[in-house]
Amino acid sequence: MEAPGCWGLLLALGLLRGAAATAATEAPTAHVLSRVLFCQPDRPSLGLADTFDGDQLFSFDFPGARWEARLPDFQPWLGTQESREQIGNDSSLCRQLLSVLTNITTGVLPEARGTPMANVFTAQPLELGKPNTLICQVGNLFPASVTVSWQRLGEPVSQGVNTTRYYPTEDLGFLLFSYLEFTPQEGDIYTCTITRPRDRFSTVAYWVPQNPIPSELLENALCGLAIALGIFFMVTGIVLLLKSRRPSPTE
Image 1 (cartoon, one colour):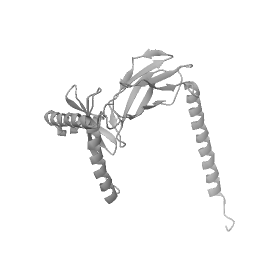
Image 2 (tube, rainbow, N blue to C red):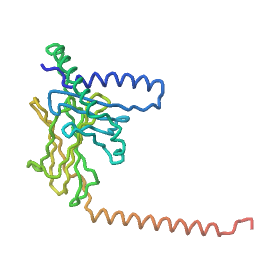
Image 3 (cartoon, rainbow, N blue to C red):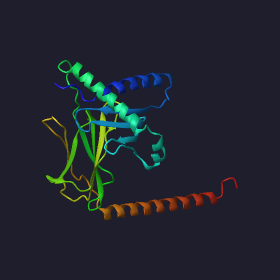
Image 4 (cartoon, rainbow, N blue to C red):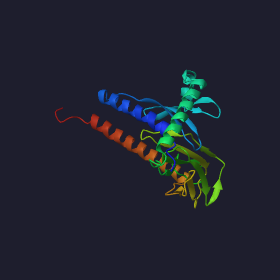
C-alpha cells in the first residue's frame, strides 16, 4: 500500500505543533502563526497556506505562481510573503522528503486516510423563493484531494458553484467549502457529493427545506413584533410617569 501523501506536511506540522504546545504552556494567551506546505501524489500535488490561530490568512496559487489573500483587508501584506523562488526551493525539499519517506514506509506502514465528513446548510435564514447560498462544509480530509459536485433532484448542477482551496486544521487534516447560489423551492432536494481518487465510495450530504418561512410571513411577523414592542415600551413609560407624579404618603 502506498505511503501517506502528506508525509512532508505531517513532519512539518508535528514539529510546529510541538513548539506551539510548549509555548502555550508557558504563556496561556499565546497565539500561533503557522505556514503549512504539503506535497502529495494526488492532485493538487502542492499546497501552501498561512494561518493565524487556525484561521487562514493567505494561500499560494501554484498554477498561477502568486499569493492570494483570503480577505481584501489582507491585500497590503501580500508583498511581504515568501518569494516564488523560495517557495520553489521549499517545494523541492518537500518532494524529496516525500520520496524518501515513501520508499522507507511502503509495505511497512499503512496509508493514513481520513473519511470525508460533510455538512450542508444555508448562508441565510431559509425563505422559499428568495435567493440564498448553500454551503457544503467538508472536513476530516487527509490527504487533501477530493472532488465536490452538486445535484438538484438527482440532476447535476454546475452554475453558481464556487469551491475554496484547502484550509489546514489543527488536527493535521484539511477543510474546504463549496458554495452553491440557488433559490430554494418547495420540494427541493440538493446533494453535495465528495469523491476522492482511488476510493471506491463517495460521501454524500443531503439538504431539503425544513420549516421554511415565507418571505411575506417573515416580514409581517417582524413588523408585528416591532409594533408590539413599541406599544409595550410606550405603556411602560406612561405608567412610570404617572407613578413619579403621584404624591408620596408623607406629603
